[in-house]
Image (cartoon, rainbow, N blue to C red; front, side):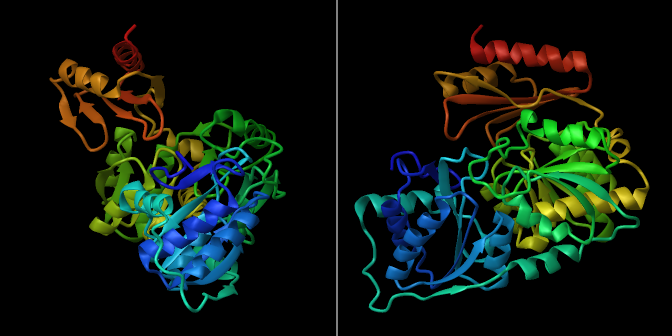
Length: 440
């Protein structure tokens, strides 16, 4: 059990760290902690998701809570079901992009509000460890089945405003994007790659952050006439984009484009994570929005969105959050907003990105360290002359460059993101920071 209760979810290797017995206890602890009465549960295509579902349900029903089983679904669909069905809570059984031997649980309160390590996961862990469950209910909870897909499709397709036919290539990685993309059927034409559900991931891992996984999609786009390509991750709460010539589009550039499209309909607050390009803030301002910077991590971003009544947020990892999907992710909405802006402007995706991609980014660089705290203190001293922000790790801004350094939540790693107005400046500052971080 050690180590599976993480910062944003519960996740471990099935049969070793995460077993049916533990899943039952987590179900009991979940109801004990929330005192919830109606719980939505969905699951991904991994072969062990169904036995974990059965065990989880046993624990939840033992405590007297009723279950709405939405079956196979994407994580955005589970969030939508939570909110639209008026549930007290939801659990999505998935390990996202992790390899096939992994599985886990994403936990939410009502309205898709996430439960993170600091807002309940650690409490649930303690209840499980100490077996401090509330007394079993005299009346076992019920279980009912509900097909949420038709309502989700109708909900997402409302945003489509295409001015001409759009053709895209889609890499499903044998994962839950296959269901998420039902929202795109009849709206855009799709060339489908790896579109058979298979939790062993026979073709490649379902992780659009890994450029290696995008090669098949890039080749498909280069040899066909497509407006763009999209790759979903394992549970389809993230999406990566390829432009019409097969180049990978940085995910913060997609945040900027979706912000432009969203702000055409409504002005308001838009969040971008602190690793994003300066250009994202500039695009939001230029289109009449109010840009606000967020911490990294979906639980933090969603709370900040709620606190400030934001209409949209984007994260550098490919999460795109919409107020209109209960302040949670919808990868299908992200795809349709990109299709909307391409057809409205009459420009290709590469043409839209070119003026926004005006600075030079290092990308996220990880370094294994012995003492993250000592390194952060050294960085504070060395770069004391810049403008400091400690929203998540250390962000330091100068007139012509900025950087963020933060510790991993789960590993002995320091993560560096840096951007400068010139390529030479980016490379020089990147190298000096890495020398300090790595002690070379």
